[in-house]
Image 1 (spheres, rainbow, N blue to C red):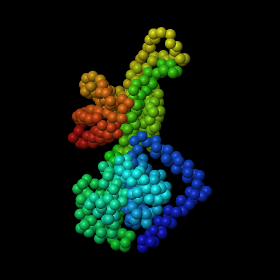
Image 2: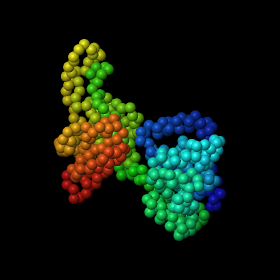
Image 3: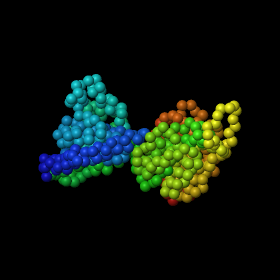
Amino acid sequence: MCLLCLWAVFLAIEIPPLRQAQGRDKEKASQSWHYYSISKQATIFTMKVALGVTGGIAAYKAAELVRLLQDRGIRVQVVMTRAAQEFVRPLTFAALSGEKVITDLFGAGAEDPNIDSAVEHIAVAQAIDALVVAPATADVIAKFAHGEANDFLTTLFLATTAPVVVAPAMNVNMWENAATQANIQTLKARGYAVVEPDSGYLACGMVGAGRLAANETIVLAVLKALRAEQDLAGETILVTAGPTREPIDPVRYIGNRSSGKMGYALAEAALRRGAKVVLISGPTALKPPSSVEVTQVQTAQQMRDAVMAHFERATIVIKAAAVADFTVRAAADEKIKRKGPMTLELEPTIDILAELGAKKGSRIIVGFAAETNDVLANARRKLESKSLDAIVLNDVSQPGIGFDSERNAVTILTHAGVETVPETSKWEVAHRVLDAVVKVRAERKAPSVRR
């Protein structure tokens, strides 16, 4: 089939749904898109990639790639070369991504070029978590390898420090040409990920290597670059987050400084790594990650009841919530008036983590410990006494990290050893904790390990 025929088939597939949405289903389509946008904004650790689309017949496949990345909670902004626009209109990607499509280095179009458009490639380079180029033509690959920067995509490539994933697509002879192979090796040597093309029937009529890799293969490469490998696929992870509030009267409560950021980061990271996630959250100012099943609670008793309600289907439990150790024995039904000194009678709350450890069966149970003194000794004691598989130690005596902070420094203790995680973002800490979970799971499966 000739290139023109292939393009006609693509148009026949793409146009009717768009026209239908503009007709009698316009209102319904608008409502669906509004909901979709809201669900993506609800993610507190949303990652963003720039998708570079270059001028080849495989450019139409990038439309599906946008959707596949969005399905994993990733924002996508498309950057098109001039040649790419001969195959797919920018409007298609704008409608799919909900983002501005960048087609020119200096903002050609309705708006006059200005200082913002002149440095937009720098702004995008700093905002993205990865750059994906699919399809990548021989021309663009050569420019990347030799540092040429004469359009938005090539300047973005040089300006970004984010991981780069390149998915070549071209004629088999062009792919096997020594110059192209040398350019590919140059990119690999510099640390860029290259998704090798598939072999098969090509649009030009020839058979061989050069066909764009399957979109799912490209997505996996992107997830790996984003540290979102699917190594937790098939797991159901129960995460607790945030503080609890133990009522004193209808307007006052006993609480703590937990923001919930660590638990929410764990939920988001686990979701990106393929797990089904159930989040039990105390009161926080955070919006839950999209695609996570959420139960909101207030008190320690409510936290315990919600955790036990979901415990049976969980394969991994990560207790990151800062549950109150004490509750008021008898909370007042009416606001207590200020009349002088007051004594509150407190009683211990139930130890949820110990209860889970006693019932864990084959599950992996991870606890958190906030300590101020004898931190390692106290954490080890909890690891053993509560039958945990791992415990994450927070030394909350250190200023500027831990509670109500974007950053943290932890020590992860397992029965196999101790790992120190120096100060970093809570997002990175979340991945290090999940890495530890994956190691524990592997150790359990290893024949030489007896527990």
